[in-house]
Length: 196
Image (tube, rainbow, N blue to C red; front, side):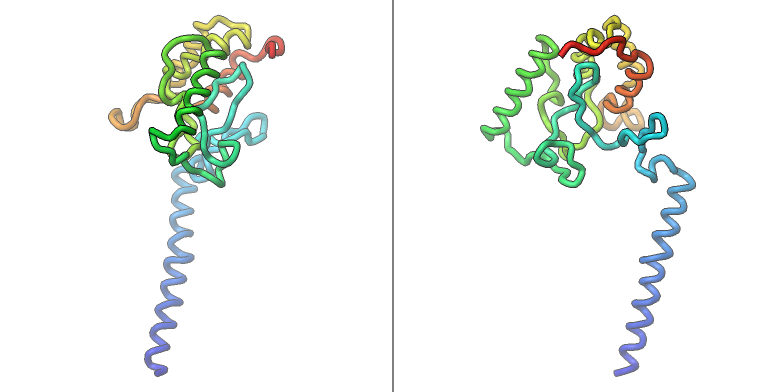
């Protein structure tokens, strides 16, 4: 009996040390050395204070900021501990009502015109930090008015923040909402509080 227990205990101890301690420490060390920003969460820091992550969407509702796509993560959206999509099918009445309400709110705030799909639909995680360049462009007039600058200047800033396809072929062009809003604050700070 002892001849069966001893190898099992030794194997368990060996693999616990190897795969539970040594391997995670090696991978953590390589990640910290090669990709320190990504390994620490791609945090955005302004004035020594963490204001968010470049990889996790957050809600911006003020008129002077680029608004993200809707989120179904958690009760109020953008809850990283409840990351998920809505799981509502295309014929679901709740989904149709939410999309219709979102489209109406966008038309009221940003004017008439074609509304990109990402402006009214949630991502699979509910935490997508990006929007399409088309959705960003739709918001340029509102942001320019709130910041007291020409819409052309805001559109140029958006164009400068468009990220291309990964490896030139994967995904779609996109705009990181947090990074672009930080660039807006840096380049075109508010001259006066926006009208509510």
